[in-house]
Image (cartoon, one colour):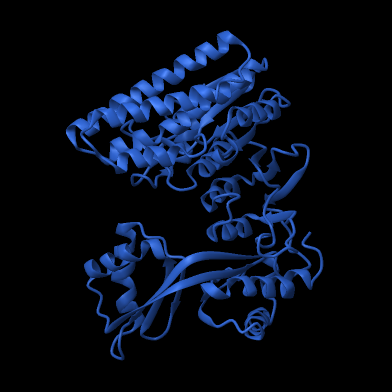
Amino acid sequence: MADVTVHKFGGGILKTAQDYQRAATILNGFGPGNVVVVSAKFGVTDQLAGILANLSPNSGDVDAFSQKLLEDHLHALEDVSDSTIQKEASKRVLELVSRLNKVLFGAFLLQELTPRTVELVHSFGERLSAVILDAYLKDRGVRSKAWMSDDAGLIVEGRFSNGTVDLTQTAQNFQKTIRPDVQEGLVVLTGYFGKNADGHVLTLGRGGSDYSAGVVANALDAKKLLVWKDVEGFMSADPKTVPNARLIPSLTYKEAEELGFFGAKILHPKTMAPLQEKGIAVEIKSVFDPQKTGTVISGNGHQAKSVAKSVAVKKNACIVTLHGGSLLDVSSIAYPLFEELQKHDLPIDAISTSQSDLSLCLEEKYLHELQRALGHARIPVSDVAIEKDVSLLGLVGEGMRHTIGVSARLFSCLAQSKVNIRMISQGASEINITVAISKSDVDKALKSVHAEFIEGEASLA
């Protein structure tokens, strides 16, 4: 069997007909043995979520939405030069939008929106996108086939909008479905969703298409995953704030995962696990310079000469501190709290504890839901304190392992910049130190820490 390479094209670089044409041109340089995982066309998933959020009995709203969606995707096919290929793709787009229209109309008519319906509706962006890219590939003479991931047998378990892929069953299914087409040509596969054991669509949540690409690479024992972006890879800091930020040539899986948790919009952290399981390397590549390789992520990512590789920031956070009182230890608070957080699927970014207090840092948009979860948990606390306008700053790098004095250098650096630390968190992995600081201090903190740990030390390589 020929080696397989998996490609990932996200919605951020699939906005126009020209973007799909560019993607097809890049892929045309690869022969058989390639799979392309695609996201929805830019903005479409948000549009689908928006129409569901404004549930109305007015069928005219559904028809207007469907017509606009149809026109947008037919417009995206305008650069397909072969009229037969364009006509066939347009027919498939029309069929998909017609099916979506019926699903939406049924939900609006009944005024009942089940989680199963929401999942199905959310899958249509990727379905339409796969048909368009497939048409542009065929237009270039590429032997291509578009597969829907539920039809291909990508099996998902767990909760709605946050599924986990059954890698074993998915790999078995792929051998029967898409593997023969991969050996003969190129397969375009939808990201973001699969199906559960009952055959119903289940999505993978935020970053789901990235996760899908890692899953596909794992299931097909791919030699590598190429992630196509409009940038070359991970940076040592946000270049908008730190002009001296530089490209990071190599990362370990864990480093990439940590940076992903900080919101680095290169690769979602959920992508790493299926890749690491089989030691599959990831190359970040820019669609504007296809021959150049940016950041490479692998199990062989070595420790840099510098202590850290990147300093990252997650904004719009808040700190919630639960005071247990002198008669309670933190375990009395933690157990019922985390059980409730799991039920509500609330993401917590950092945790800090003392003998009787527990501090949680999370995005402000989840604060109301956390407060509701606290009410359900009936936690024995004497007081709850909330600090808003907080940002998380994280220093990441394998070089921090067993390096003495990293924390002291970080705290000293921030103190010299007159940045007050409001919370500290460091995991057992020792490759990340996270501090919570005031939102107003972010820019000077980033510049100061980057100058201390990155600019002031040797190459990142």
